[in-house]
Image (cartoon, rainbow, N blue to C red; front, side):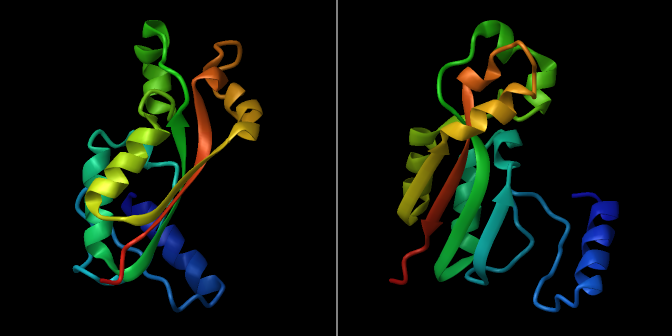
Length: 154
């Protein structure tokens, strides 16, 4: 997030009277929140842009209260990219190249300590993903997914 994005988010929250939200500037790998503080962590299509995804999930686990939930919508890899697509700078910035396979995400979540892990790939997202790089076939390599997990209460 940028300072401008934070200002806009705070402005929008104030407009609708949402007093139960807080916006902070930070990095996914180092969340600006104390241990065992958050009830829920939400994310929408940004983890695929982070090089150290395992660290993101470790950090989320640290920040969540026991019983807290992780609820993410992101892009996952469904097949290995061709060398041409993997080297394309636009696809690197466009959420395609950084997508990890669902099994790898499940592994990172389990290693971080999460339970009730679910990565649900949404095949119907292919039509939209095809518009990201028309005629390139990226929809054959990535798909949208819902990623959910829970921090155990133990």
